[in-house]
Each structure stands twice: as structure tokens, then as C-alpha cells.
Image (cartoon, rainbow, N blue to C red; front, side):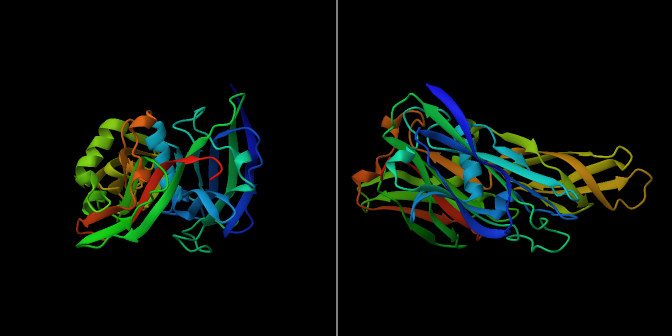
Length: 372
């Protein structure tokens, strides 16, 4: 096998701050992955507003049919659960600072998987489709947002030669998105069209763990004919995920005033390590609150005067990227252990409330034949 990279687009500055754009995928060789990179510049400040939030959808489509469809947050989390290492994450709220996030959209179990890859030749007009809104969190035009007209997009195709034409690829799709009720159960009718390799649940609310939104869930196949997951609690599944995938760490630079709350990208066991970017700014600071994706800092200036706003070199530690919990089916490297959902006419996911109304979603990674 020979591998090669093709720059579909590199550092292309986007004229629109809110739109959807497509690029044709006219490749004759199997596509192992697309490396997608997004970059944008902050205005004077841009606190708690990340590229993960404003790239709202990343898809591979054939006409109106989505072959692969996730939000950027979901795609970044899936990258970690497939690679066991974080994607490229450089969140920053510095004055006129640059944020840059890079992620692999992988069509195999990992990069350069010769058994599972996207065969673009099997489709009439496959396209990469990206939707974004730079003002989705903080409205553009002020001092606390992304700077207008600064989004840059890169897409690098990871191609494999001399391997034949793989008959299938791994497709990831968002099945459901909803606000979790504070009591009762939220039902989701799941896809039964292809086998499942991994399910991922996301439930986010500021200052809470995912299990405070979804307490436990049940997968019910054909009204009780088979129950592959029976009353599994998210708190315990999150512990399994920590053992299986480990923690992550990445640079996270902060511009903040003392006693202000800072939002992280990691929702569980969140810790921050901050250092002053200028050695004479201050010498004493502490983290009085540090949990569930939030940290509150207290610091004082070296001369004892009011600390004001400070620019910090930062590093973030923890797990549960973007408040997600992965649920693998069997051994993620062994297809014979994955869950064959096609054997059932209906599968329902029943999520039981944990008391907090979190923004939630359900994602499936499935085995999909090329050409379908």
C-alpha cells in the first residue's frame, strides 16, 4: 500500500461568517480520512467561545443523503475515542488571539485502515459539506466575539493506493438532538439500517456532569426481545471510558479577571494549570472552584493592587470532551463483536432524567457499504 495526501483546500479565508459550503470529493483512490482544520481570530476578547461551538455541522453527502453527519463538537470527541489521543485543540480568549482546531474524520477504525475506507467512486457526486456561524455564541461586531471575515478552512484528503476497493466504511451520524427533561424519560428511535460499532451520548449544561442530565439508559430491541444495555448508569460508564481511553491535555490560553468563571472543553475531572504570560504581572493566584468544565480563579497583582484582567498561558486536563460519554459495542478492533442492529425491526433508547436540563445528542458509528 502507498499513502498520499491531497490538499482539497488549504487556509481558505471564508468571505461569509454564516453559511454552508461544499467541496467535491472526486477521488479515485480509497479515502482513509479527511483532516479538517479551522482557524479564526478573536476581537479584543472572546471568552468562553470556541471554534468547536461555531462549526455547527460537518458532513459527507451524496445529494441530499448524508453519509456522515456530526457537529464539530461530536467529531472532535469521536476523534479521541477512535485515536485515544486528542485532536488539535488551541482554544484561546486572548486579545486578537488565534484559535485553531484540527480533527480527523476517519472512515476506518483508525487512520490507514485498508478494510474500511470511503470509496468515492461508488457515488455519483460525493461532497464535503461544512456549516458554520461565527456569531453562534457571541454576536459579531462587538469586542467579545470572533473577528468578522477571519475564518480559514483546510481539508486534507488521506488517500490509499494499491489496496483495491474497500466494500464498506465507518459512518457516524447524529441520531437525535434534544434538551433532556428534568424528570421522566426521553425516548429515541435508533437506526437499524447498519451494524453499530460505537454509540456516543452527549449531555451538556454549564457546571454539571453529563450524568446529572442523563442518569441511566436502556436499549430495548423489538419490545424486549433483546436488551443489550439494561439500566446502564452514565456515571459508571464514564468511569469505564476513563479506564479505556484515558485523560487528555491541551493548551488553553485565557484572558480573565479575578473571580471570573472560565469554561473548559473537558467536562469531567477538569483541572487547569495557568501561568502568567508576563512575569511581572502577578505572583499569587489560586483556583477556588474547579469542576465540571468550570474553573474560577483568584489572583492578586505583585504590588498588592487590583489585579484587573490578566492574560494567562494555560493547560487543560480531564476527560469527557464536550460532555460526551462513549459506549463501544464489543472490541472496537474486531468487527465480529460489534452489534448487528439489522436483526431487529425497532430499537429504542430510553434515557432517564438526572435532574438537569442538558443540551443532549445521540451519535452512532456504523458499518456502511460503499455505494449505499
